[in-house]
Amino acid sequence: MSDLLERLRERGWRLTSQRRVVAEVLDGDHVHLTADEVHARAVERLPEISRATVYNALGELVSLGEVVEVSTDGRAKRYDPNAHRQHEHLVCSGCGLIRDVHPTGDPLEQLPAGERFGFTVSGVQVTYRGLCPACARG
Image (cartoon, rainbow, N blue to C red):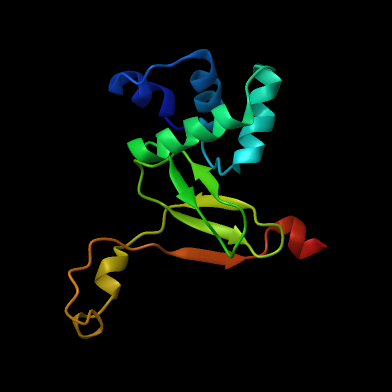
């Protein structure tokens, strides 16, 4: 499970009831929800929470570096609370399901010096694609 709530408490982020609900909805492993999905789940817990409040909280969490925006193939942005754990994503080309994966090895080492074109490379994003079991059956 992610430690989003604990990180926010340690940072002193004011956890109003609305912010707490957004953070609770996002907390966990393999969580990659759209803003609309976060809002729908937040409304189940706190019916009066507005869409604007959810969007504002998500924007603040991204600005703080506590949540990462994930975009795949022009689909809606998704929000990943595992911002402090090195991982890549496995994306279903059919339904868009996203799972966190932890490959071994350093992807920076796989880029030969001759292919860096003088860049000082500071990071790498790898996205694995395929079909999830449900889409592969269907």
